[in-house]
Length: 127
Image 1 (cartoon, rainbow, N blue to C red):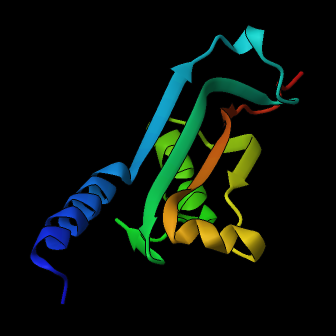
Image 2 (cartoon, one colour):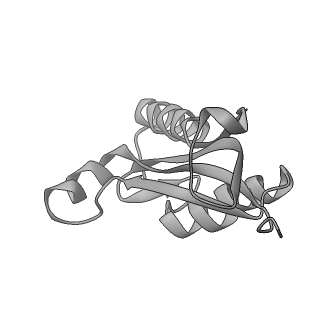
């Protein structure tokens, strides 16, 4: 399929691309009085999730990047693990998948990220 010398180069590119795709979750605990998120909500942490996938000849390595994965499987799950009831002020960003951005799939990467404030819902004080 490939000449002998080119085989090694293709293997090196694929191996490098496979190690380039990654995901990460970063959290930082915050003081409730330092951030206002709304009435009856007590902020406990800021959570940031990111997934990056390399592309070689339109093949995602290690896998497909989506906002669903970043928000529902990473951001919300991490917030719940910290003891949060909800995540507010969610911000998302993803590398576009169409138009001129499609050329990036020849040899490039795609990133999706989401961040928000993990909060605990507090009951209304009764008089």
